[in-house]
Image 1 (cartoon, rainbow, N blue to C red):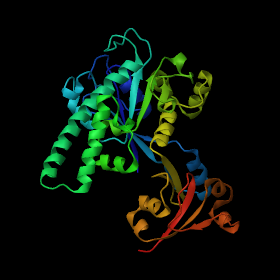
Image 2: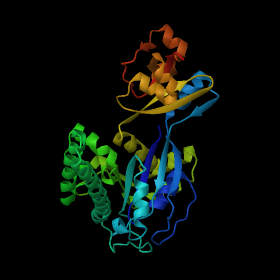
Image 3: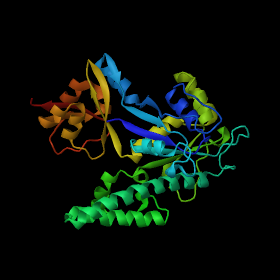
Image 4: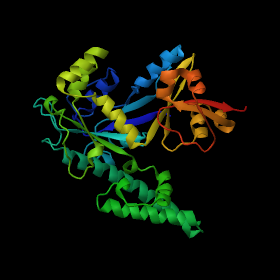
Length: 358
């Protein structure tokens, strides 16, 4: 599975500049609203130093990292939910992503106009969230109408529960709560899933800051959890995109940064969606695979091929560190290669060989 992150925000907050830097893709960037009309899509390799290490041990012909897909969605404005700006079309694009990176502006540049007239990240977030809430309210009202009409002719218990859940979320909207902020239990969350609400998607808040602010570790935005906030200078990322490996490292060190904004965003995205990586390694290829934390060995095998899950017999698994140090045969000789069955829960960094019957 690959992770898809939609980059959203008001016009002129630096979304497209950030997208270009992250994906190294040439796109139109201009100082006016709605420069981005069709969503740009860029696929980025997830950096994982373990892959090259294992590839050396296995003498692999190729290395295949897992990827993240970034979708640059045009700037939303006040009234987007009712069609203002390029409104409904772009709200529809957000529905297709796994998570949202909501870019807000804190950088100062008199030559780049802010559509709100002033730099205020908290207010930017409120405007975009309100438009998403209003669009979701429209979705919920439509869904409630359908379910209530069905109820008159004898709705089943699940439909009645869905009505209760939707009414609960609708009440939350009236208090300016996102669907993800409404207190729901596991059963209620499951019943809400098929409504595909915009405000139920996991969100990261990417603060596009001035270069001198990039090392600030204490940034706060009222009402936002600190683990949801990522501080990135799109300007720095654009410069990094033009540099090679060693030059990138030296430049980051000179700025007092431990990692690039892309690395921070990818790691935060994995945490947000509760994802882990397992690895396969052999002469043909060394490859990374992404699964949800808590996945069983057969479910992980199914990511490689559905037949692997259906015919799963067992998995041979070792830690990537042991594979790197001793190789596959060395791990077997030292008892470091374990045989795991259908109930095994995958761990990040597992190196696997799956046995299955066809």
